[in-house]
Image (cartoon, rainbow, N blue to C red; front, side, top):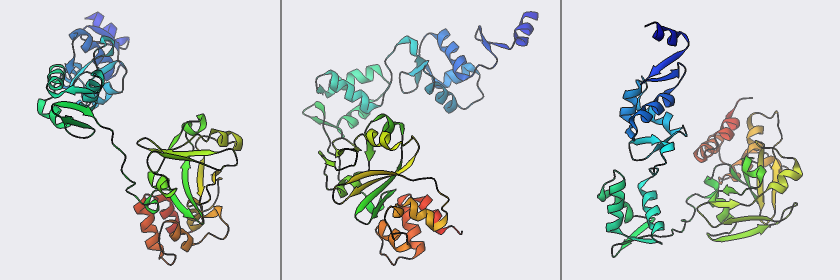
Length: 319
């Protein structure tokens, strides 16, 4: 008895015969339980064994966020050190089998392999194998390339994208990808407005060298802007405009910190300050595809529909 009291006094708790610090969390106790069990366990049983007062979903989230654990079936968890095959979505499992069989696998074999390894039904496998991005013809399952569809949105319905004078203006924040020189995603509606279709690319004129834009994968891409970031002393987190003019000119302009409020701030966030004599309600309306005489509530409604809540709120703010 005195030993138990001494252990507790030292800030240690005992879980399934293992000594743990009292501050040990769900993952520590779950690791002990799995180590003792020696085999993957359902998440509900793990939650019961560790005696957590948390919901099962909380235990699942805790294990998913910890590198010591891995999901090996729809509801089974294991220790990563066991080096078992990780569970993936049915689509990914099918894609992996297709790749392992040089691009095509017989449906019957696919069903046999996946149902024997994972708790998935044959019906589910056959359903996924017959739906994009897969096709089943004469009993053989293949992955088919899908061409991205045309942009569903108009540029005027695209968040943070504005038409200012003779150019499209996209507001964005510099990320670590921009700073280190990686490409970054662009709205497909913008790429379409620039006259590019899927599979095409072009170079725009820029004061710091040609700028590539293109659309060859699932997402349209703006090429590296690191040279501009370095030359202009831009920093990660800076709010900027990327401008794309009708005569194929490209630039990035930092939005400097400002004391602007109300409508003046709305005009600034929409890029109207980039062009002289453009700061007006009518210019803002035209920038998002409305008639220049549109009423203020109509402009704010359109901005909110696009997701530009910051611009709408500034436009209607009382200053």
